[in-house]
Figure 1 (cartoon, rainbow, N blue to C red):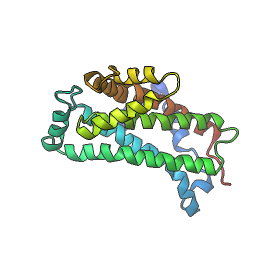
Figure 2: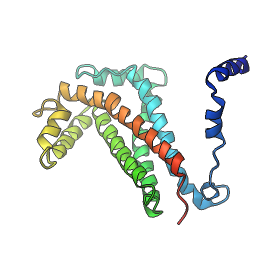
Figure 3: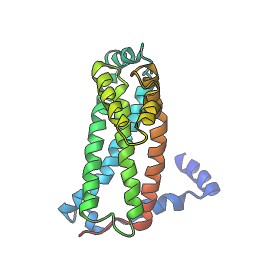
Figure 4: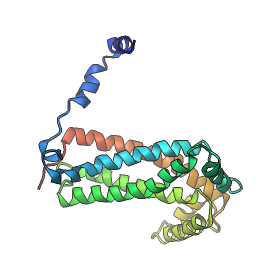
Length: 224
């Protein structure tokens, strides 16, 4: 049955060459841990992507229960953790995954830097990777406020004060993030939620697509 469905689709849009191009792509010997134990460092990028996928899937689950207003935000998180089946596990995955993905990104970035993989012809992919790093930091920062507890509230205040110190655009940046520059309140929570769930993920998907396309075109960098 599945074969017939596949053949019907393949007859019309010829999908076989597409997945064969992906599946038959050869991995260079120097990045295969089975041949070289030191090749494990080349896995940091793939492991980072794996954690990102977990963050996306767990985040989609969390948004089905989260209510982004100051009256119900904390209550919705509490309900998720205490009443929803496996809610505490999924929230825990998302919470700790936010830290793990930053660690993995840092390890991947250090591997690329110390092995000189940012040099010609991969300068553009290095810049895309740096932008990805900042997007992930932004996701961590905006997500921190969403539980709307004391730790999140005061940590966000500190973060906004740091943003205000940016030369020339600090005040405008704080207003853009907080909505009301004088207080962390309802507007701040709504904006952080929108940035965390819509704007930054859109940037993340676009940059990831560019990152993977460049890797396929240029190949994986060789060892030192």
